[in-house]
Image (cartoon, rainbow, N blue to C red; front, side, top):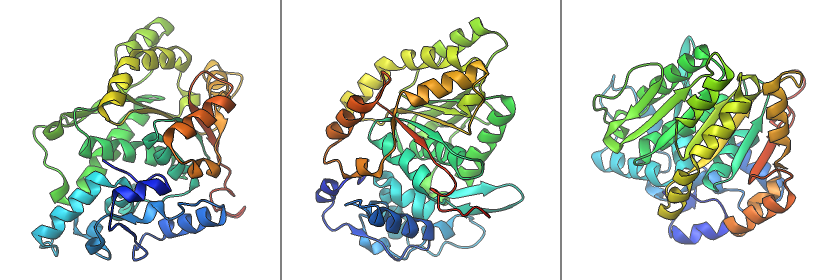
Length: 337
């Protein structure tokens, strides 16, 4: 995949445009926000490599309940655009499951954008947001995208407990079923609460929950090796101070190999604010504070190397980590919402 992350990336996609015909208004709003914040490449999330797809609204072709309105050529073009351009997939194709209601389009904001952008820049990312603003959604939807269009990928997802794991796996499966049926082909894929697979491309997401004692936490995390790692509700995950160091260390070689081969890799931590008087809350706070605060000025870096250097010079910890705490106002909400 070749995602547009900075101005210089447009040269690799001659003929690409920024699509103002999208019906996903959250992407238009974010582009305007980025422009007002001085981002040179403010229109990156509107990127469309194949202009003939503008106004197609492939998302509406997902149910299979009615005959498809798209031609075979349009389906092929859309699927190829998804594989090469994650912004298009999130903006025009992805549907997010809703409890007791119809699925909705993926809504992007400064926080969810920052996680996606940082991941594809191979920067570890720590996202702190209030509830119901998309922190968990962006994590599992990005993992779904990678499972659908990556190849030979193993992803690890730690959740705070079995209930959240079961809920996340259900949403992952429903989100896939809400995609246009011509974007995936199931082949004896897993149907349980701990493993999500896409066998056609040899991809899998393995979920891990805290065990009952500290020693087992270290062993469980060490036994799960992957180049892509996610943690949901980090500050509320018991024994996370044992699990994270073990899991991240176990995946070092995989991430090195991914760097060499050009495969996606990275670590993502999302949570609501925890409590400093608990081991998991204190560990999460110290890890997050070891990163450099998110700044939209990062988007104006000319290269990935420049971005990494800026982070490493400024961060207090030993990881190339961005810490992104967003208040409701920074996400475009008022005090009444």
